[in-house]
Length: 420
Image (cartoon, rainbow, N blue to C red; front, side, top):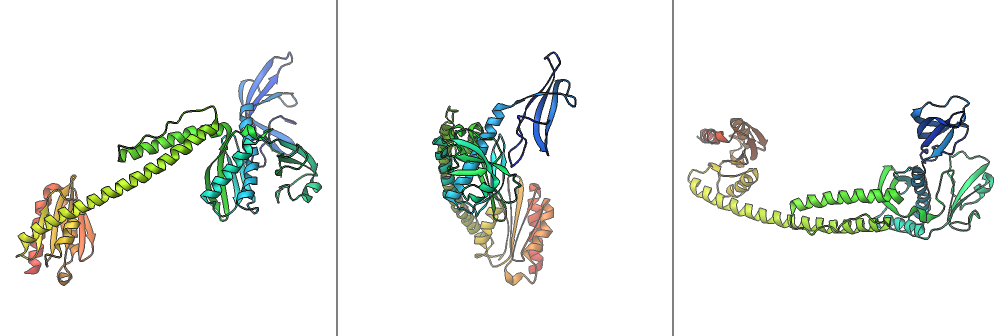
């Protein structure tokens, strides 16, 4: 089209969507198309559209276009708050935090800038400052001036590498409308709100590196922030349920409910996040205590088993035995205690949860005769498994619990034969 009320994608802001109507000669509509994207190619505006009904327009035919106003509102809120974010980064982080790219859509905004990683305090302060400026409900205005004049103003942000015409548009936040005395002023051709209060609220949802020395902030505002809050509440609930599966007596999360005020919804998300953080710490501490108790119980049981085995096999000087209901961890603990009581080779087998565990321990003085890893490699196939390790200590596993006696008999034969 030669002209359009739809914004064509440029400068990071996505193109508008809307409806394209084809009027007939008697003023009845003969076609309707849904515009899904708007681009600019030189002096021509390209509308990617899907035919809804009737026919498409013919070359030279006049058409009527309507903008998707709800979508435009989300986009322009995100665009104005991008300017506020840029300003806040200069105030909180550094004047050298220069823009490297952006995306401004109805769903979110992303802002790429040169900087070291932000600290949690910096991220909090940037978000806080932007929300304070939103609450002030300052005016947002724009005016056109010669580019030569804009170049002389260090308080008007312009982007090196951009191609500007002789006349440029300055978007100003704060100050007297169109007087070029705002706290935020940038050369910009995008759509914007009329006052910062229309943005409602602002939330940084992610800050990450995208290249060496370049960070990206992803953020939401307005209705997009409301949607994010509801989605985040769902993610928080899933996280809580995961913790509750570990420890059932956790204090419930504060209830999340949709509120007329977006800020109230975001505050509830923060409250739930703090509660979750405490619950995670509690579960970690509980797991740590449980692990210590289990470890103590394991060591106590291993010591008892080792004592019994040492008494039975002391005269023989080596141990080949089954440890009932033992997994690899218990066998290792028994072996660790037993090797200080028995001077010869040790071979232990056990079964737990349908799996066979094997352990071989060979003192260094026997290493010239045979090795623990070779012993395991020879015996593990008997129980349908495999294993390995070092000459002094090796482990194996298998799935055939019914062959444990045969495995023990073979271990006894191998150890006895070598010692003879």
